[in-house]
Image 1 (cartoon, rainbow, N blue to C red):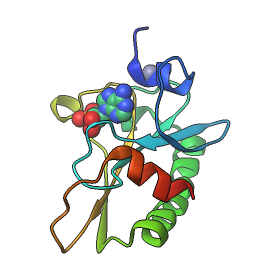
Image 2 (cartoon, protein in one colour):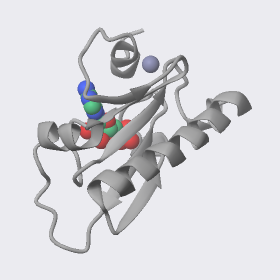
Image 3 (cartoon, rainbow, N blue to C red):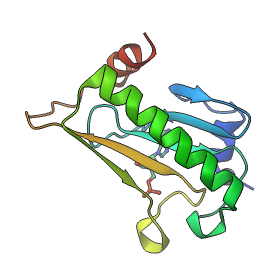
Image 4 (tube, rainbow, N blue to C red):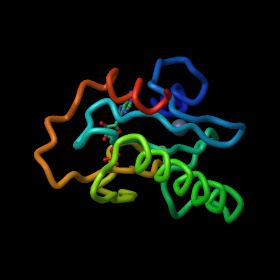
Length: 121
Ligand code: AMP
Ligand code: ZN
């Protein structure tokens, strides 16, 4: 299957990876809508959130909290949104959870490399 997120999970195409384990990978969105916008994906292919089983769903939920805490600590956002798209709203048909920070001040969407360095230091 020609799936871009399967390729990212197997490191066949590069990503700015913030965290990974046996089950999931977390990386910066290539076209961020705010500074620190990232995606959590299961390494195994599930097309959308309706396909997730309980085990992977629980794991993604736990990782989403850990990553949210990391973003809060390192980027000091004023808020966060966790978003999953489905159907016509979903462009990439490999399940992913967006974590999108919000800032009260104008966000000039920093360079992805600068954000990456802030998050991994
Ligand atoms: P959606 O499927 O509409 O929920 O959104 C797909 C998201 O994946 C968009 O925010 C894209 O910017 C992002 N995206 C697509 N290709 C890549 C990639 N190679 N690396 C990182 N993010 C990507
Ligand atoms: Zn896939």
